[in-house]
Every structure is written in C-alpha cells, then in structure tokens.
Length: 235
Image 1 (cartoon, rainbow, N blue to C red):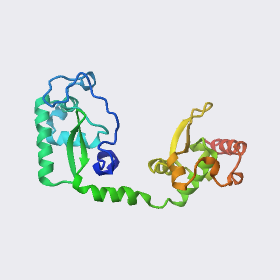
Image 2: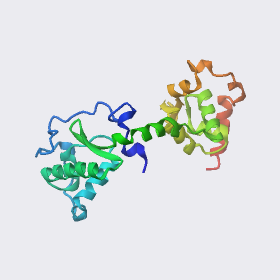
Image 3: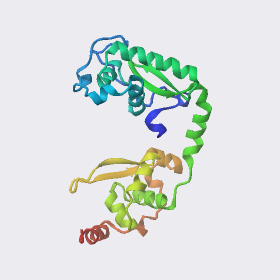
Image 4: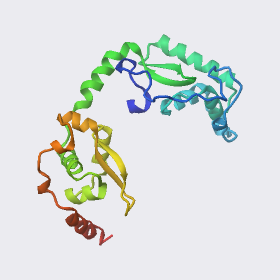
C-alpha cells in the first residue's frame, strides 16, 4: 500500500496533503447530519454492497480517498443511514487510538481521512527526508537529461533518443518531482514534459540556461522526426 495514497505526516509541515478542500454548503460537517449532497447521491446499493460489514466497508473507502470525505458521502457509498455511519466513524477513531496503530482517523474540514499518528512523526520525517533520496538509476538519469535538454518533449521523442520505452522511467521521474506535464503538442496532441523547479533546486541551478552545454550531442528535432517515422513504420 503506497503511503502517498493513504497517509501524510502531520509533523512534515502540513495536516492535509490536499489544500483548500471546499466544504459543501448542502452537507453539514457534523456526522449527525441527515442531508446528502447531489454528489453523494449514488445508485441504490446492491445486495453485494449491503453484505459488506460496515466497519470493513468504511475502512476500505478511507484507504483509497485522496481528500477528506463527508459522512453523508460515505453513508451513500455503503448504503447505510448517516447517523449509523457517523457513530461507526467515531468508534473507529477510538479503536485506532486504543490500539496504538500507526495511523489515526480525523475529521478535517467537515470530512474524514486517515493520517499518520503524531507519535510516528520522527520515522515518517526520516523516510521522507532520506528514504526518498535514493540515487536515480542510469536509465532515469539518461531520460532526465533528454527531457532537460529537449523540453518540452513528448515520451515518444524521449524514447526515440534513448531507443527504448521510457514510460516507466517517466513515471518514476514524475513521482520524484523532477519532471511534470507542461502541455500538449499542437500537432499530435501528445503530452509534453519538462523539468520542474525542484529539478533546478536539486542541481543548484537558477534556470535552465545554467545547464552545461551538452545539447549539441543530442539529435536535432529533424533527426528525431525521421527516427520516429522509422520506429512507427512497421506498426
């Protein structure tokens, strides 16, 4: 289970990975509310949904949400009354505290979400500060170099330069915060990528103009186009 999908450290400088989560005007933040927003109106729950124990269903939903979720929305998802779901959420809060688990359920901004336990903050901070700084592989470094010197550039063009599929490596670079989407190619509609400000920070550069002049060793755009045509000719 990826920690990015579930929990964030409270001691890492933020209480919530999502910012400015809007509160609904139609749903009260209190878990005892009987009102349900339009977004919370789901299809009538099937017997399969109703057969799932309430505690199990709520825990599963809380593990996959990427922002605080209102009690009414959770109740609609599990097909149970809002007060019943609210009471169960409160029990989960108490049970997690009593069991001394590594996460806590909290109500933030009128919604519920799992967070790391405050007592685990030193471990989480150390992981985020040091565990995510593992050296990039040779493939990642080569791909990052192509993006840095040819940005904005599509995955296909990067693949053409390296001669291999770079989808997985590009995802890694995005996860590391070194590469990001910058737009779309006006002709092909392909997603274009470029380096981030974090990339400059990590290299100690002020701007891309400070990059060493090695771009001359990379194929020019026309050569890339010819190579792309050759690669796709047999498809």
